[in-house]
Image (cartoon, rainbow, N blue to C red):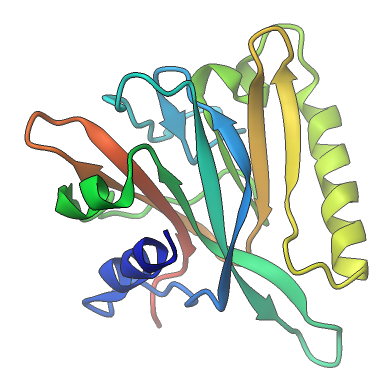
Length: 202
């Protein structure tokens, strides 16, 4: 799996057009309840990308996040995320698939400082009777505590639909833009997703 993760980094950066910070390490951060669609734009009210056509069978998928140390002035360095990979099949099958080129446009996130990965029905903003603002306050508390402890793997998981196991993963990011990539088999089945946070190069 490690080789696959770094191959995604090289795929995204191959033309030097994305201002993505190269991760310094990857860590498995848990599992995501898939539903039928996945989005990297959780907590967005409009204009968000979703990914369907996922490999049928698995109801959950492992999530790997790529972190790097970020430091401002004399402040202690904190771990930030620039890439998240969601494999839906074994690495051999993913490598054999066609890896696409992402969204290809100006795609700012609606949530400053965080990227949110979730199954589309489990977005905190779209679960009936759910308090998304309370979720965000808890996320900020968890990640701030992790920053204070110098945590290398710093993120927050919120269970948004306990009855169906629906969850959302919040990652601390510095960059404004979001992009998503699919590994596609010939019939259009998505066997892997990779997501990045980046800024356009100056």
